Structures are given as C-alpha cells and as structure tokens.
Length: 411
Ligand code: AMP
Image (cartoon, rainbow, N blue to C red; front, side, top):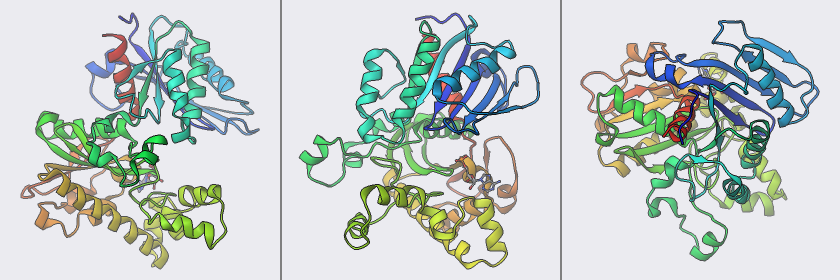
C-alpha cells in the first residue's frame, strides 16, 4: 500500500477521554526537536459527563490553546468535535494529506506482535481480548469504530502496548501456575507501555552512538503508571507488568507486586468483593494508598517539610525500583545503560538519584550536577568513570505510534 499523504492522526482512546496528535511524518523525519512535525495536539476529557472539556492546540498555525467546555455524550461526539477543531485550522480529517489514523491499543495478546492494519477480522480479534483487558480494550475499540465510521476509506492502524514484549522468552512470560488453567484463560505475562519501552531503548542506543542490537538497556518508565523492562540487543527479554498493568513497580495508584494471598485475605477476612479488591489495588494503592498523594512533586514537597508518611512512601517506591534494577542486571548479564523516562523519570531528579544510590559496585552512579539539569532532550546523567550509562530519555509514544503507522501504510 502506498499512502499519498504524509500526515498521521494518532488517537489514544481511554474510557472517558481521547488524546490526539496530528503529525506530518515528512517533518518529523527531516527536522530536529521534540515539536518537529506536530501540527496539532489535544485532549477530550470527561466524555459522557456534563462538564466535558476539549483542549486543542493548533501548533501548525502557532495559534493559542483553545478550551471548550460542555457536554460531549460519547466517543463519536468527541471525535466529531476533534474533527471540527482540526477543520477550523485547515487540518480537517477529509484532507487528502491525511495518510492514516494510528490507534493506541492496550492489549494485543500473543497474536499481535506488529502494528496491524485494521479490518473487521482484526477488530474482532481485539474484541476477543477484552476479557484480559477489560479496563482498556473496550475504549480503544470504541475509538477505532468511531474513526472508521468517520473515514471508512482511510487506512487505520492498531499499535499495541504489548507488542514490544512479545519477544520475551516463554520462561519469562509464563507464571508458575497450572499450565492448563493458565492456557484456558490466556493467563501469562504480556507487559504494557511497550511503545514507550521500544522508543526509549532505541533512543538510548542512539545517545550512546550505538545500534540497538549492540546494547543492553534497562528502561524505567516511571509515570503515574510505571514499568521496567530489560532490553537485550533491541529485544525485550523481561518486563515488570504482567497479565495486567498491576504487576511490578509501585505506581501512582497501583500496588505493583504483592503476595497474591493478600487478595484471598481481603476476600475471606475483610469481606471484600473481587471488584472492591480490584479498585483497592489499582486505584487506591501505590503512592496514593501509602501517603494520600500520587504526584511525586507533592510527595517531595511534603518530605521537605518533614512529613514521615510521604518519606516512607518514597522509600517503598525507591526500594522496589532498586530491586528491579538489580533483577534486570542479573537477567541481562551486562548492562550498558539505565534509562529513566515518563513524568517521574524525566522530571524527578531525587527519584533518579535515590534509585541508583549505592549501586556503584554494579557500575552505576549519578552525577549530581548533570542530574539537576532540566531539558527535553535525551541526556546522560552518569559521571564519566561509571561503567553503566545512566540516562534521561524523554518518551514520545505518539511519535512512535505515528512512525509505526506511517511505516506500515507507506511501505
Ligand atoms: P505520566 O503518567 O508519564 O504523565 O507522569 C505523570 C506523573 O509524573 C505525575 O503524577 C507526577 O508524579 C510526575 N511528575 C510530573 N512532573 C513532575 C515534576 N516536575 N517533578 C516530579 N514529578 C513529576
């Protein structure tokens, strides 16, 4: 298939939100800087409520950010509103320059190992995965259906959060539980944030002046959701999230790793239902459960004021992170770089400092003045003598989705 246009609209549809970016792939490839090729970015929030809000920034025209408040009933209305905003800037969805729409899809199971052109059969397969991703795939599916209805003639591509992790060996992906039960219910470790881990591990190799095939990288994606991955020669060999995004690191509102018997205990002793336990572990645990705040800025502010609960939450967060750095060092055997990314990883210098503190014997260290630099560019924060490069590498999931989408439709 050969696309005539060079623009890609990236859609990230959540249960009550749609994030979008319109990119010109010609410019993302030819220019530098993080804003290169970005024509418009925006967000529709609180879909289905009276107080829905659309925030749209027309970067192409240099116009100001526009905010519209008022009820937006569903995803269809949301996407129509986005289309109207884009049209107002001369960037409408009917433009022949639009080559494709790229959709973020959270769960691709084992089948989808690559970006995939969406047709009815693909959509059915994504629906078949709803039982293993009940919180995410339904919203992604709604986004796809709506976009297909708006532009039935346009190639639409699904880019899966799980795809990068499908290279994990069977002994990493399989839980040590009864094989028949696991297989009957497709229970295994899939991993998430794959688009980010793929992008950041590649960028880290570039920062070191190497090809991805030459380096082993531990990627720490620390946002409100957080995950670590071990990437050997460009291929993911382990990642901290599992069947769902609940496993692994301490996150903003998720517990991460926990003795599974805690859930039986909550059911039998505390009398909680499966849904209540799900909510507790996904929405009321992690940093917010530990100290009442999930924003690392606020937690650091409280620590500076001597707040002990915030300090303990921080220590628990860091301890888990350190355990994963150690575990993935052992998994990889040789580590060339540790890369911090996402909201916390890119911005919270104290987190980077604390996570690497005491790991000098493993060749890892952080230089205080390099760590204090604020920048949107990938950069090293380790001292020259350190054997392992420690880096801050801003993630860009939208660009990665757009690039994968465009590569598929222009091939
Ligand atoms: P993300 O999910 O990648 O958007 O990351 C969101 C999280 O990043 C927020 O909940 C904060 O904890 C964290 N964050 C964002 N900006 C900063 C900052 N300047 N300093 C520390 N943490 C930050």
